[in-house]
Every structure is written in C-alpha cells, then in structure tokens.
Amino acid sequence: MKEHNLQQTISLLTRTPAALNALLRDLPDAWTLRNEGDNTWTVFDVVGHLIHGERTDWMQRAATIVQFGESRAFEPFDREGQVRESQGKSLAQLLDEFARLRSENLVKLRAMNLRQEDLMLRGLHPSLGAVTLSGLLATWAAHDLTHLHQISRIMAYQYRDAVGPWNKYLGVLQCDGHSSSS
Amino acid sequence: MKEHNLQQTISLLTRTPAALNALLRDLPDAWTLRNEGDNTWTVFDVVGHLIHGERTDWMQRAATIVQFGESRAFEPFDREGQVRESQGKSLAQLLDEFARLRSENLVKLRAMNLRQEDLMLRGLHPSLGAVTLSGLLATWAAHDLTHLHQISRIMAYQYRDAVGPWNKYLGVLQCDGHSSSS
Image (tube, rainbow over all chains, first blue to last red; front, side, top):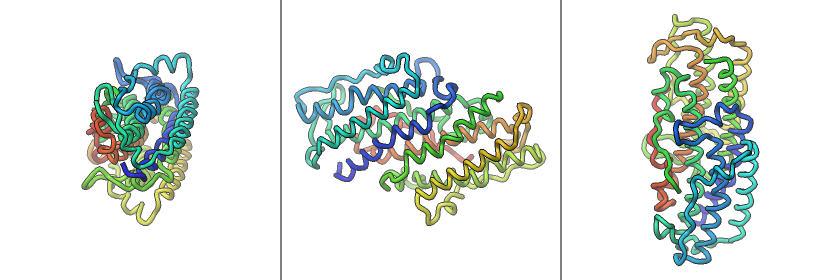
C-alpha cells in the first residue's frame, strides 16, 4: 500500500457516515426496517453492524498489530454484535452514533502517525492467518463499500415487484454478492 | 402501487443527490476516475448517466404515458448519452447538475398531482411492451439504487488487491449484478 493510498482510505472512511446520513435519515420505515427474507438484515441492522465494527474491530485490530505483531491473534468479530448495539434505538440515533465513533477512530488513526514501513507490519487473523496493517486499513474502507452495496440492494429488494418488467434491467436485483463474516 | 408508495418513491428520489454528494465530492480521482476494466464505467460516468436520465428519461416518459397512453412508445434511452453530458466537466459540476435537475423534476412530479388511479395508467416501452406509470416511477427509484450499488462496486474494485486475504469476505467483490440498458 503506497503512502497516498492511506490518504485515499481515510478520504473514504471520512465520508461514509455523512453519505449514509443523507441517504437514510427520516426515510420511511418501509425502506429501512425491511429485509431480504429469512435471516437477512435490514438497513437498520447494517448500520448497527457498522457501529459494532467501530467499537470492536478496526482500530482494535490495528492496535493489536502494532503492539503484538503476529504473536497475538485478533479477537474474532461478532457479526451478530449489532443486535445488542441497536436494541431500543432509532435509526437516527444509530446514524449519529456511527458518525461519532468513526470520527473518534479517525482521530486515533491519524494520531498513530503511520509511516510507510508501518503499513507493512504483520498481524494474525484468527481464520485468515498472516495479514498486514495495510490490508486491514484497506479492508476497513472496502467494508464500508460492501455495506453500502448491501444497503442499496436491501432497499431495491423492497421494489422488486413494484418495478414490473423493468426488473430484468436492474442489476441490483440480480446481485448475489452477499458478504460472509469479516 | 399504493398511495403511500409514491411518497416512499419520492422520499428516496429526494435523497439520492445529497447522498452521492456526501460520498463523492472531493474524493481522490483514484476512487472516481477508474473503472472495472474494458468497456466499464467510472463513478464519474455513472453520475453523468444519472444526469442524462433526469434530462431525457423519467419525466419525459411519465408525460408520454399521461398524454398518449399506449398509443405512442417511449423514446429509447441512450445509455451512452452521458458521454456528451459529461464532456469537459468536473465531478463536482456533475453532482451539482444532478441535484438541480432532480430537484426540478420532483417539482414537476408533484405538480402532476397524481391520484391513485393515475398510477395505473399504461404506456408503451419500446422493448418491454405495456408498462404502468406506477412501474415507471418505482423504477426511477430502483434505478438510483442500482447505480448506488454500482458505484460502491466500482470503488471497491479499486481495492481488490489492497485488501489481501479479506477479499473473500467482501460481498461487493463477488457481485455480478451488473445492469443492462434501462
């Protein structure tokens, strides 16, 4: 990962909360509280998942790499952790919380003053094995994108019948790029 | 399509320009001017395509349905029309233009004062045959979502190597829900 790509990563990480806020705040529940069928997530669930990642995943793993290298594996990420995070909250509250946590994490990331060679530091993922700090940070950004991708698909699913014969033209209704655990 | 779903459609159509603006404005070109390989679009191209739809597709087709019903087919939509729309412009200019055109179109849509029975009006699509005004308006919203889905995929593609072994966990990198013409 080249130096400018850390800036590229940060530029995206900085924008995701505002993008989700602009898209989702005060949308009718029919867009945000419906899922894609049994055992799938609503938009509300996805935002809770993003919050859980800010609390327990990305910066914790970055710190583990810097402090322990490959001598200590990351804590496994709990993909259902957002259920606890989200209980009793509104989507507006989740959007605020995501924005606050992301902003705090980017302050911490900048404070790490990572140099080019630091990005090559290695860590130990509990399932993937050896990984780099560079890969972790790139994945943080790509993880935002995979969930933006998922949110647009969940929402489009709610209109799969309403669009009538146009459904075959809409790629989002043919997507099978569903994420597994991260 | 029930009455409240027209409001659901409008609620999304209203938010898309601000969401794209929050996500994309001033992002490094490495996110917005790269594509997914030969004959694919950049994020910049996609925003140009959305503009072209605002100019020539959705409201024109709605007007054709109301005025001519099934007696006159829609003009075919030019999927390459965004090349002309976008030439010599910056992404910031395209985002401004999309926001302005969308806002103007929503004023026109509201001014049509569509009643429940109007949504069942039928029109003639040049390839799909008989369609309804309801389906057209639902497709307008779902079309926003298919391109938000595409934008997140184009951007994630730029990090397909940078994420290292995490690539198999990221659904967006496995997506094959690519749109055809609309």
